[in-house]
Length: 294
Image (cartoon, rainbow, N blue to C red; front, side, top):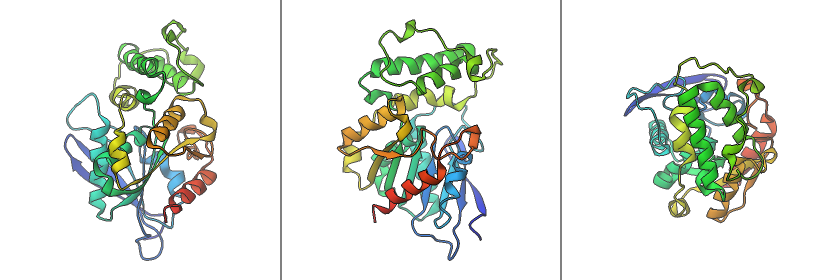
């Protein structure tokens, strides 16, 4: 099997069927320790550019439950980070080649922190890139209120108005003010989003993951006790934004320095979802961070 071929597999989990992809390297097909790339709710497709820059390793990506090719079978409206963490654990165990190196971004980083707190023996190095954990922020009350409002807006008005609020909140520089409710709601049209409600409520970001992800409380003691090397990272262009601020706070709680990566929150993207980061530079930095453990 060459480095350009991908093997898709499925895995049954309570309440979901998980689909994950294994990219095999050249040579003997082992490539050393596997590298697992995860996001949430972003699935495997978002890591195509990054995975293509690690053809010397076995690279694993997957679609989280409720996203893409991993449908929920239980009809549950919400997913907790601990539930996602158990799914990632199942994928690692199915590989049978642990511990793995794990790069996790955004909601995936939140889920990875939950995984390492529970099953640190399965992860050699975790790079947690911009986990949007509102609870660790100095303005946590306001930040949690903003996230609750985004979710409530989605339930009441649909995707366009809620996504406009999400984009505005995610890209905001600095603290959320206590009087954030007094600010005018952003216009969906300004972001190219529809104002009309199409009636659907199946968006995994705004629906099932928003509150559990942002409301997660990292278990600092368990993370410090885990055998995993935990590297908390943020994009150089993300300074002052909610996920980068949360990353800085988590690094502080763990007593480590924040590691800066090129570009922004989606710095590893190479055009996926119409977003362009700096995948070459990002992959180089990730390789250097992972090699630093050896």
